[in-house]
Every structure is written in structure tokens, then in C-alpha cells.
Length: 168
Image 1 (tube, rainbow, N blue to C red):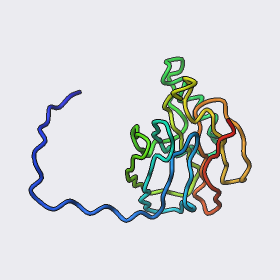
Image 2: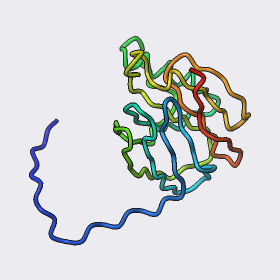
Image 3: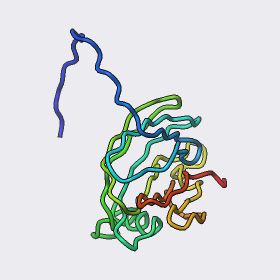
Image 4: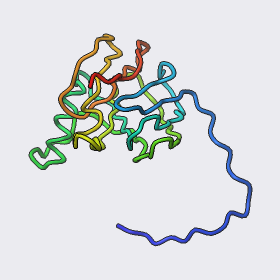
């Protein structure tokens, strides 16, 4: 699908930026949240504080699904080895952002477990950047390594922890 567009000079005042409820830094190779994400509408100011290109996708996991299971199913679906979609729903995210880039992401979070991950290949190793990361389960606050793309596993049910740190 394609749509040609034309961009013209702005004739009015610039729109005001949204007021963020949280900030999130995308770093090499993980995420740093300024605080807990609570249920309800959130506006997250996102910056790429890393040296490499980063993006993120937020997915709400089906009950009982782990981040590793979701990413394994997503990989199979994308590669065509499975016709089953991953066990969860994508909320959205932020597309590829250069180092120093900044954007806003808004979503209405219901209580549950979510996965935030960066699927961009590492410039040096050719693997998804989050493959180097560590997963923080905000339900148990335990850290576990994941074999595929993975950033931070987030629990928005009132228990929380903070984003991923690299163990590369």
C-alpha cells in the first residue's frame, strides 16, 4: 500500500508536546523506566540514550504466557514455520530511532503482564539488540536471560520493577 503526500510550510503555531507520565530510555541493550507503569492511560516520553539504533514494541501477554514463549511464537510466525499468531496483543511502540532521538508513546494499560522488546539487529553482532539483555519479571522481580529478542517483562497489576540491564 502506498499514498503519495505533499508537505507544505506550517501556517499555525506548533502543537504543544504531551505531558509525559513516565520516561523511558532505550539503552544498549535494555530499557530504563523512570517509575512503575500503573493501569490506565499513560504517556511515555521515550529517548534513545544508546549508541545504536533502537525501537520498541509493547505487547500484552495472554495470561500464563512468558516473554520467552511470546517471542518464540512471534519468531515462528514471522519466519513462516507457524501459522499461529503469538499469544498476546501488540499495543504499539516507537519505530527505529537514531541515538539521541526522542518520541512520545501513549497507551491505555490494563492490569496484566506485558513485554517490551527491541527487534533491531545489533550493528556489531547481527543479533536483535535485546537478545543481549536481561529480563526483569515485575511479578517476581527475578532476572532471567532469554535466548531471543527481549527487553523487559512488565507487570502492570500493581507490583513492579524497573527495566532491563545488559549482561552482555
